[in-house]
Image 1 (cartoon, rainbow, N blue to C red):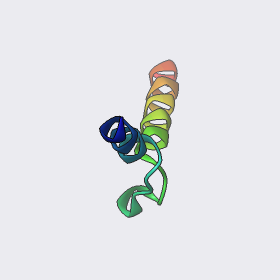
Image 2 (tube, rainbow, N blue to C red):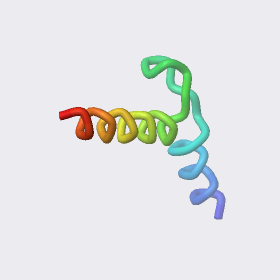
Image 3 (tube, rainbow, N blue to C red):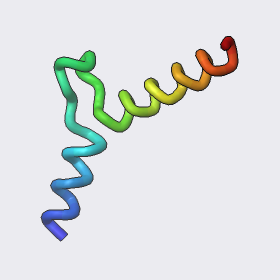
Length: 42
């Protein structure tokens, strides 16, 4: 259970400086949202 908790925190809650101090999960959501908007424009 400790490993599962660590993996969840590592993937969803830690802040990453190179991507603007946001969690990786949020960065992924932003990426796909931006990609979907660009697909609709094209």
